[in-house]
Length: 111
Length: 112
Image (tube, rainbow over all chains, first blue to last red; front, side, top):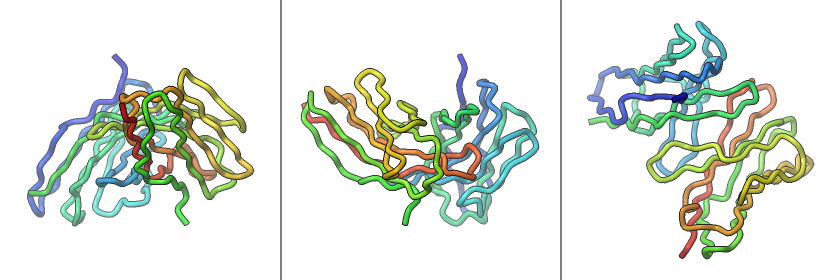
């Protein structure tokens, strides 16, 4: 089945710890994205990548880092510099027409 | 001014009625418009997209685009309780490559 797989579904982070969220797609899409969603809010763009080995900051990139070494994979690292990381993280990929398809999300909680 | 604005709701309609969801955007050069449905605790699901002025119908859903007035709407006919969800409007703003800017969503409740 084609789709976008995010893991883990739930993640708990201790203060000062870096954590990495996985995102893999087998849709052969060039573009991939990371969004953050806070309760009752829309989605805010963290990072995006249009092509392998290239990525750009979105609206709220501070405290996050990404890599795009393979077309299928776009992992997101939440660093200790991100002071309020508790949120729902959504990875997406898109066609040339621009419609984005989402993974099932990772819910990150600081403990 | 937010780039993409939606009434947050909540919007309640009785079962069988037409639900009307509205979205305005600030960038006149925007070309692509999308509607997503998000059930509580789940990820957004693409349900409609529209690129040209006018109406686009898909089953019980109709997307309407008016570029001159900079608004896009979603009509849900014969609303069902299973349509109860948050509906997100997303716009591909001009000069933004393919990434989408989202509104904050409208929460819809269909009452049985």
